[in-house]
Image (tube, rainbow, N blue to C red):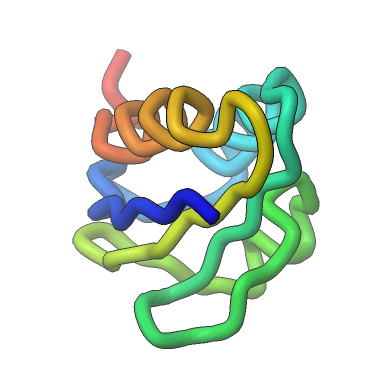
Length: 89
């Protein structure tokens, strides 16, 4: 199983707009991805309810996990997205 940590870079955290962009990217991946706060349970990263329930504010560290062919590349792409300020114009 591939695993990565990411620090949320968006100024308002992983709220509606950044969460939507993240979920769109997750849904393009060839593997199922989970997300959770560090040392917390993993939740379905393709679910807006799961993402909003995280309450991941700016600077929060999350863990992404995926298994299967393409997992490493998928997580690399998703980490890069989370570590970008998605609130910036």
